[in-house]
Length: 171
Image (cartoon, rainbow, N blue to C red; front, side, top):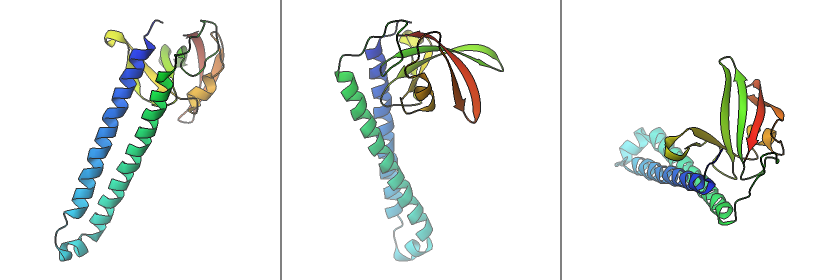
């Protein structure tokens, strides 16, 4: 598993920045929609709509704030030297982790990147080769994998279903 972690961090940062721009745009659109109820009579008739647009704008502003916090955490993490993990070393923040999973379709491999932000984001390997998922130490998968080593098996509960995963490699 040879992936350039800095390239992956950059890709995640770009995705978070794009989400932030979309959240700001959605907030502005919702605020404009709430203001566009021009006349007093329209405002009275459409009071519920104005409240809903206002709530939507507030939600998008909160989303943008959370994205900014994630970007700051990611930037701070990326400014340090990224940790190196021996193949048999324990999973920690900054690790790339290959896992084998078994489900109704048989065995599959998944790769995770343990980072302080960006949970659930799918990243693309170099040249579009494969996908990996960002997990954080506070996520169910992150909590299960932290400290584990190649060969360890963990139980992860996702959507109410317990699954067994085996750590294949840490990098």
